[in-house]
Length: 222
Image: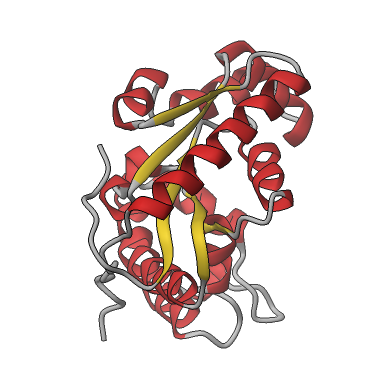
């Protein structure tokens, strides 16, 4: 499931968190943050690596053309999303640009920490094949019905659109197959917080007894 461990920097244990769309990852990560745990969200890193003025954004422009850049120099995410949906190979092209840069930035952020453990949120863990970057994989699990209802409310989507979004991601069995720990987000707030508190204690105990190997990213191509 997750990688082996040896001496590392100031992070004793690297926990990769994943889960399907609208499974409750933000709620869980915020709860860990309130316990003093550093949280790195790869969705945030993905935006950083294509921010205006970055060579990542220039690489996207070179690959997809100026039509995916807005007049004020921002990435036009809707235009890029339309390209990806229209051309299956476009996603691979985009990931070849962004994934190494996200990995490199993730490694920098982890290296700057001194903490028993850190949470790294990777929504598409299975799809990206990043499970070996972490010491433990934490899955936030929710029912498909709850996910569909939440994403429809959150993104103002129709039922068919929400269903397609769920179908385009890894399924629950694939996520469970890589998970070391599972938070069951099918219950009430009290039950959720109890699971988080128990895992916090467990991770701190594990971190006290072991440390992680250095994560060496592939890095962006020149």
